[in-house]
Figure 1: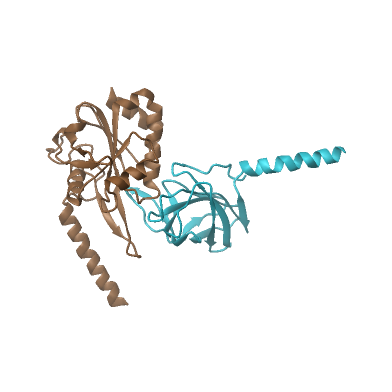
Figure 2: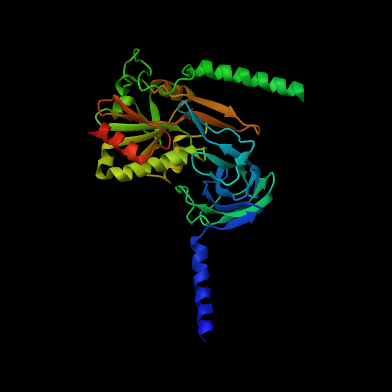
Length: 158
Length: 205
């Protein structure tokens, strides 16, 4: 009976924990978590993709590209402000050094989702495949947050 | 293929040259100076009262710099097709306005688009309706925008993309003016609110 109560307790707790913590996917030494995007107005404007990548290994890796069914032309970009002028050059690859966490976050690296196949509506999620040089392909679901969102609305996994 | 690359390169150069001739405001490597701007003599502070542009806001109202005198104002350049810098700046500004509390009513906030081809008054209004309602959007003809950018000594540049579409590079700072029209400060992109909000307060008070 006591055991039953514990099992029941766990069953109630687990969904709560899942709601508070971001989805997290691991491949080799890499952990990908905290994925999110902003809602779009229609499909003409590019959408954005943010995520956190942690490398627990002793060898560096590189994010070389992303793919998603919601955009015909997804690319890695970086917002650079030089002499006060913001530009958004294409990033050929993003280094994920050993032992470090690299964030694709507002004002820095981001996935630029061009040629959207459908508008991104708040509350939906869509899959994104991240291609790494060593760890291979990692797929994560990105929740679509408000156009006003400034960060993931969950706790990045440990 | 190689020849095509060369032709494209040449077209790009010609386009860039034409753009610079048309804009006439692109200045080499300097950070956006707190002094200067159109009509300013060397060393003079930038001042709204010396600017001569005229634009249309997202309600369709014509706006000139003299309309802003008598109240502090905050101006930044951007475009609504930008997925990273502009939502970030708009949300930063919304946060600053919240921090200012009732004093936020004493400052006018305007986004001037550097992409008038896509950002019509209607498009600006639709986009900005997702953010703080106190932020107005201004647009005009390419010549109007060039004139406004020159007034603020702001740089912008159209950057073609491989798929035929384009994006814009632009000065990302937020210009804060006193009620007199004199430039009070420039807030850098993504500057922490602990620095930004006092700068705005100085312009209001």
